[in-house]
Amino acid sequence: MPSGGSSSRVELSWRLMTAGSCGQVEKFTNTTKPLKSIQFPAHFSLIHHHKEGYILVDTGYSDHFHDAAKSFPYSLYAKITPIQFKPGDSAVEQLAALGIHSSDVKYIFITHFHADHISGLLDFPNAKFICSRKAYGDVQDKKGIAALLKGFLPDLLPEDFAERVLFLEDGKIASQEDLFPEAASLEILNSPIYDVFGDGSIFSVDLSGHAHGQMGLLFKQNDKVIFLVADAAWDSSAVRNLEMPSKITKLIIHDYEVFRTTLTQLHHFYKKHPHVAMIPSHCREYKGESRCKLC
Image (cartoon, rainbow, N blue to C red; front, side, top):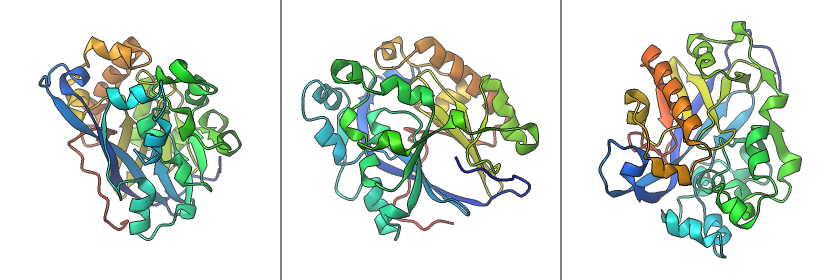
């Protein structure tokens, strides 16, 4: 991972975007919600780091999902979580509409390896990947039913993934002087706080439960603090009000009890910093933009 001093805060521009959606019963994801099927958006983020360049956080869906889910047992994934995806929705196409070529994307931060977060990796052949070693290790070499149970479709990973990946655990753990107040409060998660680029611009912390080694990202855009909490919750209401998913989700998440612990910690973070935009990857309260210019 690149490293540098953090004496002056690096400027960031950020946009939330959406690449497709999937259908699921809302009450499964939050027991306070109605018993009806809804479409959950697959958000991803575009960050422009004024030194490192363009960075994606996840990719949402792409046409590669259909190819990877054609054969059994992977076809079960598409049946269990049917997706809505139309031409122009993929991350690479949306970026092209903004004048950003796939080769301009220098890094893709992978929160975890579920298919709705990595379906577009193949579209960015020059990008380096940033993730936790735990997350990659949990799916590495998994095939067939073992992969499906992890929500992972092996054909979505580039063949040279292992040569292009950078593990957070090999990077810099943030020191107290690197942390602005909201970032310092990440200590409530009882995990190392990683300074992703070694310059105090983007911090990452373990949000395991939904997936082993799932990571969140916290950073500032101007004076606004953004906390991308991945799938530590399916909606922002769950974070604000400490609303748990149905126990039926034990069938699709890595560890239900760890999920509950992580969500509780995020709720306490919210109570301390209610001004922070805490954004789950599938929350309908946030609308991903697809035809915009970076700030």
